[in-house]
Amino acid sequence: MPQNAPGDEKACQYRQFCKRGVDKTHFSWKSGDKLLQYKLRLTVYINTMDPIEKRTPKGISIKIIQGKEKFIAFEKSGASIYADSVKTKLLHNIPIIVFIGDDFVVKNPQNESYFFCKYMKGKIILPYHFRGNHQPNYLFIKMESQLDLMPVKLSAVRDVPHFIKEIESGIKPDYIIVNRSITKDDILIIKNRYSAANIILADGTQDITLAGDRTRPGEGDDSERRATDLAKEVNLNMLSDNPVFLARIHLRDMELSKVNQLLLDFDISAVDAEYILRFIDTMISRSRSMDDLKRELPMLEKLRDSFLFYINLMTKEKDTIRELIDKVDEQSRVASYLTLIAKVKLFFPDKEDRLLMTEYENILMEKKEQLTQ
Image (cartoon, rainbow, N blue to C red; front, side, top):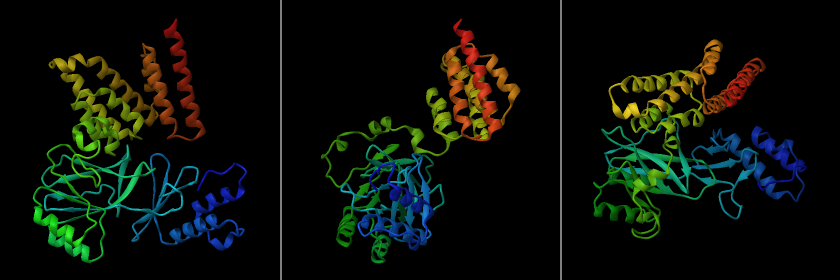
């Protein structure tokens, strides 16, 4: 729905109805409100279908119509997100992706009917695994969208004959993922039985496998770039929902600033933060005998202090928090602690907790003044 003026009462009522899914008979429209009538009827219909609902990190609300492979989406403000550039279609198609081959393992960590892929830079980022290999690979599939998460329907079949049975049962995949075990004759069979097939080769020879759209090899910018080049552009924090796993990866690669960024990118529990702190402490203890760690010791110690401060904020250890603030000896540490307090404040909406957080902020501001003198 296009943005409306603040005084547009009708639009405000519509947004509220979208959220509540009320009976359309409780709301009357003028004859000129045909688009809004359609939106309301569609929203009410979807709500009667027991939709799967998902809110993305950007606050976009997604409602999936189960069994129809379609969804509607709303901005955080309640405005509709259209499926086309001319803003006439509200129903978005859910991409259907089929893996063909015994080697593929399709994992859905959310254990839901649909997999929610990260969407960035005009591509959905689809993780996949090969049997016997725990290291994930990634496909980058071109797609136009205004979302930051894209629902997709995933399935895997053993071989081409099983895929043909799926086609005969009515499935219409948007993308077919194959590996090098699929022969040219297999490709011809797939094309003959399903002419709309968009076949992507995923050979797993690199950590991230680049998948283009329906262009031929050699056409377009992406075909001339290595997948590893794309990997450098993608923040790994966007490819996993597990901050402990990411911390181990970043620490292994000595990308310490990215470990610190985890505190801002994720709502990390105190328990998970404890695990990460153990990894950092282990590296600090090993720095006595390892030169590469010894060079990074100052940064590792700052990282340890940040996680320690965060954990004590989460567990409300007042005395320890004050001790950590007393030890602050540089303004960058003050700024870091203030940022963490602002983050943790969101977890504790009670007035008493907020007053306590404000008290910590005041102590840090006093510390900042002392350091400037």
